[in-house]
Length: 586
Ligand code: SER
Image (cartoon, rainbow, N blue to C red):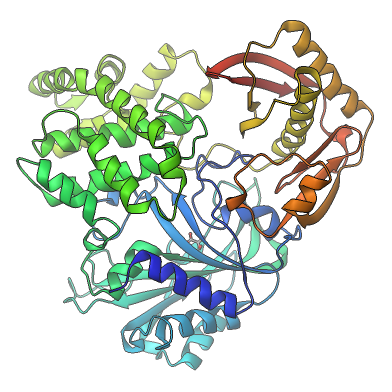
């Protein structure tokens, strides 16, 4: 039997043999990238390196990355779409390109030493070409050389065979996708790779990243030709075991079993949605980065996933709180490989329970309200949707989903208007903005990132060496920095911190980057507050002489004078012993 563990090991062993450095999974919460809320793909934390910055581990990398995407949330419940999933990936940073990438993929998939899949059941797709980039005949030729006949090589347009950027801007390119024929009957005449009926499982995607999409929507050639590949662990394990869907693999079985046990009116789709969503929630909460259910940004995604699970729990006839029980199964299933699940199980279970309590109390009243509206109207108005949101905590997407089930429409625009009228908080809170990321991976973000290093160092100077970074998040509007400190930071202290940061900016100091082992970095006094289990063999150290020295993936400005004027706008507590500073650049 193939397990997730066995597949991951085989993949990483294979790429180690092909001279790739194995790097750790990055956090699900991107620290210094305002373009997305979560890490959506393995390439995402590698953006600076795809753009040309040298990676301390070399030009060939591979890993198993935790990913979270909400784009496919509507498809969750089918055989193989997920919000959270594990993605195996290998990268060439300006090293090998199409030929080797395709040879590696083919060998790993079909060789008896590795997965041993039947090559007769593999089809592939390539980019058909358009005004931005030519038809990818080269990839097709390499596939033919591998023994894939022309009839099983398809050409599709950008919407199918182009990947990225992860946010609105950044590295991207044409891709070639590999599909495994499960042997199921075709669902109709037009059934071919890419069809969602479950006959063809897309198991691997090789992206040839040689373009950069700019803020104006142009595709510019990158300085180097990169490869970025992604193989979904769950679906590949299903294919290898001849199972019809991911939920029958050992990766989901314990959770699915629990849901079935608790259900009165079991239905497979609701059970799958619950297991998919709660697995995602457990992994996000277990990051321990202070992300909890809320009405903004990542917290809103958590809220939406939990509340949708609870609603599906009700459809299954589950009485009372159940999320905790499922979460415990997730933790048991994955704790060996992902120790953060055990370490932060307290936070996970507590937050889940609190959100379930909150929503559970109002859900049945909300459903009654919904029925009332349905009884009198043909369309859910913006006002009604807003009422359901505000008084009963129905995320807008959930209202849309229920309305759709009943064949009703919803006036989404009017809801958003209503929402903005009532909500005085930041623009980013507006529901519906979450799908495509928040902003662009811009210079502003890079300036804020360097400012964060100066802030960290200044806080340690003013408050003491007990100060340690606990989290950081950047949007184009502001930077946010969480750190350990037992009490409120006084106004005088904040002024001192601000002055230290601005002094370093005014001095126009050159920022220096070096590569070394983590041990060496610590010896040289670089700040590095993370679990060393997650650190690759070599790290980058950014030094701002006289001000800061920190282990970090970058990117940063070249000189501190690029940063602009730094201003603290807020200081508050976020949990016992952890403070949060928000600051802007003027
Ligand atoms: N970035 C591509 C994907 O997510 C390949 O890793 O499919």
